[in-house]
Image (cartoon, rainbow, N blue to C red):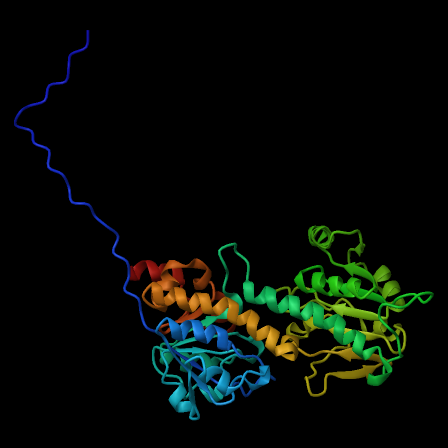
Length: 403
């Protein structure tokens, strides 16, 4: 028989105080939105609707005069929701957080204040070591919004811009097939008794998928090439129908290109550059008046005959084939693109205020940390550090040492 437990009368039980989590004090944000003057940029990073939410939550937003005109958002749209309109760039750059839709330019380096937060895209080909040195000296916290991840591990802004680029690629191709733009006068979808145009898409990622959706929606015949069987399967499943799909094999690719009316380049970059899979000879054998849209041009392009064009002069001809090689396609439909960027950034800004500021948000959210490439005098992006021979500091370790 087991003994009953003995409790000494000298033992006393003292209740402990309940410990409650101390929530961080909310921080008032001071946000500046400059007018972009470079990179053919028409987008604006925050729409008036997003600014309205920020202002109504007690934050201060300043917008440079005419910052939103490229997207048909006017000064009155911003002032009516509580933003302050400023005419002097120096006045705008007194804000603690600068939100941009184009990369930091050399002209803006002098305007940036020490310890400022800058959220913008990053274009590796335009980045220079001297620019990085100045940003490091000023201990700027720089976040590339195209590298921010959401809770599901995807890149929401990159995905939105890719969807826009895919759809726009087909709509632009349809435009340049018409006589109005010196095309051969083909209707992309055909009509009764006349077969539709043949569209060949290189790449089965998000750009390729939305290019395929748009082309199919317009009635074109679509053929997709990619070296990833998984991506080809995923694209077919997402679209919900069987399509002509193939791995990139030069002989069959050359045959299909010779019959195509439209070719879209949307391959993923390898080590920062897009592989060139369409040779000069392949383009020379394409039909006169056919259209190439090289969406991959911002990473070098996947057609040997491609070179960068602009929104002002978007096309040129080689071997009688029309080439459209504009790197910032989303800027051509800037209002849609601005809303897409704003939908991602506004909740991030609100969350940073609730958590006590950007430093707290960076510490709490690994998806935001993924976008940080400069942090208070340290380069925290390994590819950038390697390219410019700077010392690399792991941001996760930096955050751990500060906590």
